[in-house]
Length: 132
Image (cartoon, rainbow, N blue to C red; front, side):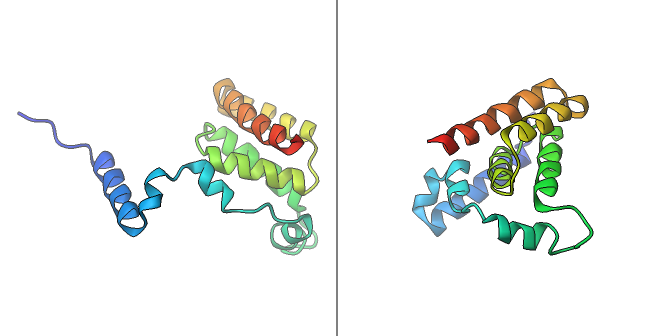
């Protein structure tokens, strides 16, 4: 008796084959490459789309982005590109490095220490890049 093929592996291979057929350069495309496609939005743009522009009495963009960061961390820090993008945008929206670290640290209570450690590592990478 043979094991059935893994449907996830088959789906991933089909997606990779499709991407290569569409553009051969996509064969070596990485999540970091994907991040490079998304420039950091200005604080004013984020406030318009994510903050007070949506609901003048609601949360500002910085707070919404810190909440998003907490959710991504609690999920197990699996979404590495999204965490790095969110940290980059939160800092642009006015969050301090301390606020980013506290947000990730608090998420350990709900997502566990391994998730917090991974998210902190990703956030540190972004903040180091910011200093260069």
